[in-house]
Image 1 (tube, rainbow, N blue to C red):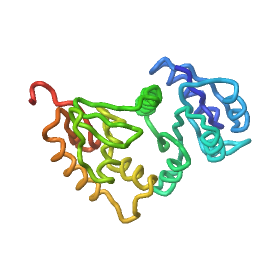
Image 2 (cartoon, rainbow, N blue to C red):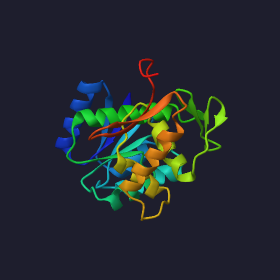
Image 3 (cartoon, helix red, strand yellow):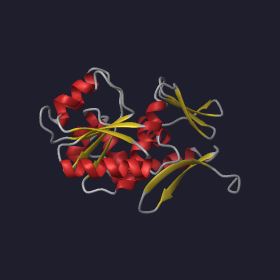
Image 4 (cartoon, rainbow, N blue to C red):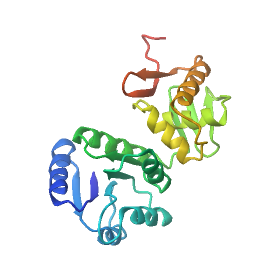
Amino acid sequence: MRILLIEDEPDLAQWLMRSLHKQAGFTIEWSNDGLVAYKRLHVEEFDAIILDLGIPGMDGNTLLSRLRAEDDRTPILILTARDSLADRVDTLESGADDFLPKPFRIEELVARLNALIRRSRGRDKPRLSCGDLSYDVGKHHFLINQQMLQVTPRESEVLAILIQKSEEPVNKQFILERLLANGADDEIGIESIEVIIHRLRKKLQQSTVQITTLRGIGYCLEPISNDEI
């Protein structure tokens, strides 16, 4: 897989290039200037982009906004030293697919890149599924064995986040930030997420999927194993 790294710190860039190739076999192309990277993206294709926001030439936020305005759907993961909730929400609203605060472990970066690329390759599919639960992306509704699952709009948003990352851990903070980016009231918090997850578990009791809690990590939507049925 071919990744464009847009980072102006040479030492960090060189380390990332070596580590990502060693850990995952990625081919990393490096640009230390936002404007140069922007022009390059018009003539080359990449599986994903790693973007630092504080780059010269064209800052990362501007680059991100321009790519999305031009309907460039290449997955973009933001590396940032800014880790406030407001910064994360702004980044997601601008079109980023994921973000990773510095410092970070290379294993997590590899896992996030792999997940982004997997999801992007399935982006054109009109329906996502996990077990007997399916989600019609265009109509924004869920089916269990072709029967409509009755959920509230907020439950639907949370379940959509989980099914898009099915069989992957999703932490509460990530869910909260996605809801805020989608226009949720500022009053919504972590406790609200827990309540929604509790209601969804009840509604999924007759299905072949479950929402498991991974302590210290988050939630995971996954098929129920034969041993559990």
